[in-house]
Amino acid sequence: MKKSFAIAIFTALLGSGNFIAAKFTTYDLGPLTSAFLRYTIASFFLATLMFIRRQNPLRIDKSDVLVFVLLGVFGFACHHYFFFISLKYTSVINTGIISATSPIITAILFKGKAIA
Image 1 (cartoon, helix red, strand yellow):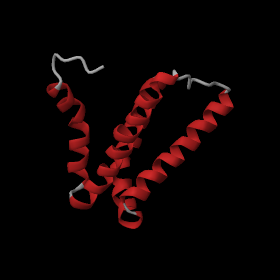
Image 2 (cartoon, rainbow, N blue to C red; image 1 turned 30 degrees about the vertical axis):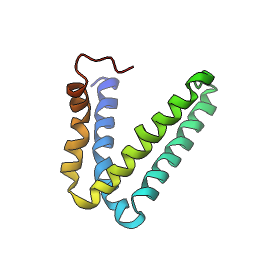
Image 3 (cartoon, one colour; image 1 turned 135 degrees about the vertical axis):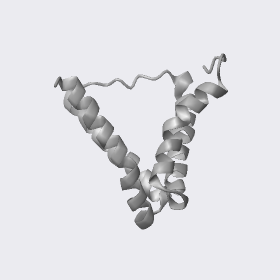
Image 4 (cartoon, rainbow, N blue to C red; image 1 turned 90 degrees about the vertical axis):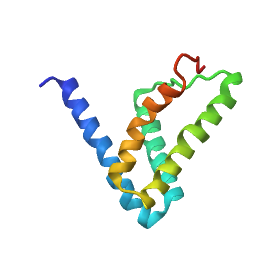
């Protein structure tokens, strides 16, 4: 098996376990704390990788800062907050199906329109 296939399989398994792990953490920590801890740990891990590799890909024009802040708040924070809340009211499988179909629904809603 090629290394790229192994990485793809590992990523799929890791991503699918996300819904199950989120279901258990939501009971103990609540949706807001779960989302906050998820991004805090991920940010620390990614910042460590950037430091080790000595790369700084974060070059953002000053005119784009507001766009990135809004994307961060609505695209990530709100999405995961509602993701964790949904796990309180429905099963993991339903949450996974809804999450997996959101790109398809977005493509259908914005068919033929420029998003950018």
